[in-house]
Amino acid sequence: MKKKLLVGLTIFMFFFNNASAGNYEKVFYDFKIESITGEIIDLNKYKNKVILIVNTASYCGFTKQYGELQELWDQYKSKGLVVFGVPSNSFNQEKKNDEDVKKFCEVNFNISFPLSGITEVKGENAHELFKWAADNHGKSAIPKWNFYKILINKEGKVEDTYSSFTKPLSNKIIKKIESIL
Image (cartoon, rainbow, N blue to C red; front, side, top):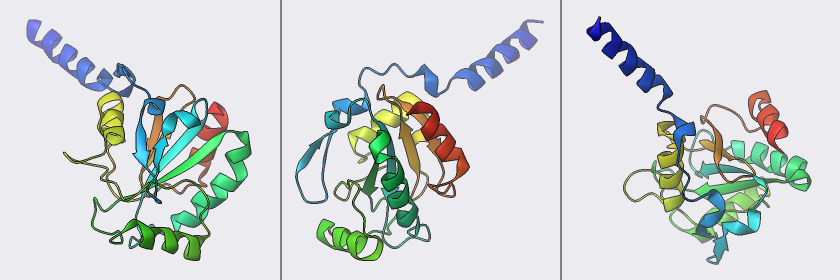
């Protein structure tokens, strides 16, 4: 009987040891990150907005998602959504410098949503924002590949995460964004 109870408790703890258990000593708006042009972006400027953070790369099979990210930004920015691109070479598919990334994004996709400079998004050298997301939401907040998406709610907490295969204009993402705007 004790063994069954122990197994049951272990299973219970495994399934419920999840994202919502985050203690959130900090929220998204407490961080700063360098922009693609070198200025420091105080993320507090996006307070009370919904944020879709996407780690991007120029040489990835998912790079065409830039187009949908721009559409999403155009469609929902007036309603309080911020699409925030974070170019990253964590998966070895990004250009060598911020200037080249910026030019690539503008020329090929006419990107006007905010972009950070090239930033590590996983591992020991990940930016503190990505470490924070993982600490508070669990492994599902660690980017598995380029164009991984982390949705932040108006309280500055991780609402949900989406794989690289989930397109920015998918019903799944749109419905969630609309429900929290």
